[in-house]
Length: 345
Image 1 (cartoon, helix red, strand yellow):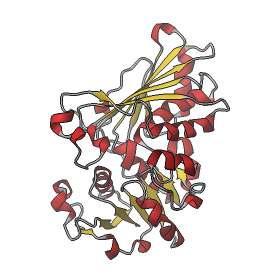
Image 2 (image 1 turned 45 degrees about the horizontal axis):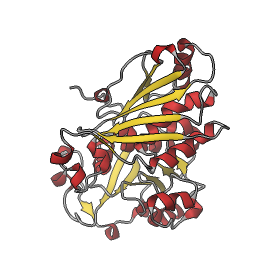
Image 3 (image 1 turned 60 degrees about the horizontal axis):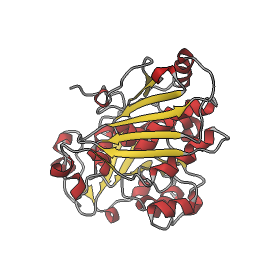
């Protein structure tokens, strides 16, 4: 059994880790930390876990995380970097769901996240945990930087086209929408029910921290400079993410060949569903599951390709993807504990 601890188990990604790991056949949950909720049974905060998680939250200073095999950090930015060096030195694998290790360039990280990076020596070692594009590196990693939710959709949508040199890398556009849970469990006016319900708005239009992350990863797959216009939106639902991606084709290619490109790219990807050309994937088709669905469109059969991508922002966009990485890191089947079917209606 893999001994697992979660640092920061009271947020949405934390409880999603608990939901998925509590039924994972090869996992033993050993500790869930929370300084504020020290001593509170997990099931008292999250009744959905009654009978599944019998642990209580523990203050961080009461838990010896070095006795674990892997530690998930479902914490604000900056927490994992403070604790990762000691854990790695003790032979513990680390999976960070925040952004501490997503950007290789220290200056870029500090520019976008407004905090100093306290262990820049680990940035180069950290493996970006998007298994469909980085599977072999994930298998051999001891430190995983779990991707952002939006970047997951953008990369899986754009990469096949960039690798095949079929699109203008300097003119990528992503029009993306996320449910309110993507903002976390903290109390903020913008995510109150009266503010977000029956409302729709864009944010981060002048610049969003997921842009440099996505561009840096896309750049790995092309020798041409990547330029991305990314506009996120908040939609009045709890879970779900829909990214509409636009790319300008630079090569004469048929729709059938485009479809074959995506199907062949993801033929061994258990959690990427390439739908028939012209399909309209819906967010509810992935709700509660680790599945990402995408479909291609070509308006008027012109040179603009539209890629529709949907996922559950808390599962494939966060906690499910982290567990997918854990499975690979410990030599397990990638899908173990992650085969939940999406909830409908």
